[in-house]
Length: 118
Image (cartoon, rainbow, N blue to C red):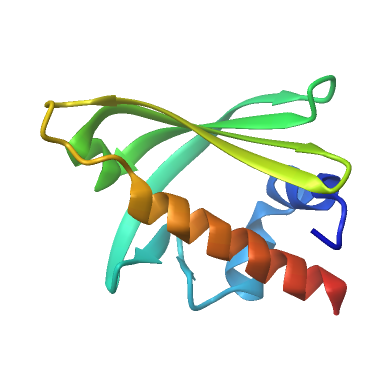
């Protein structure tokens, strides 16, 4: 990344309300756009850890919880890196891996980086 990973983390930590304005085509209110469909992913900030430079978001509602019993996202950063970690429990063995969401957050990270480089 051309910007420091801390800028992505800081944006989610201190200014999450600005994300829909930065990338309106991908963020819809408290939701997101994935695979041609609008989806909801309501989350709460469960933890902010300055030592590990991470933010933990716990999903509390939306379509993802129809597929998974629990879903947590950890966003961490170090210098030029931003790492997204998904911790989830599938409802059934047939539940797919969240690859669509992975593609979404990769695009989200790139769009935020483009905005911050302006």
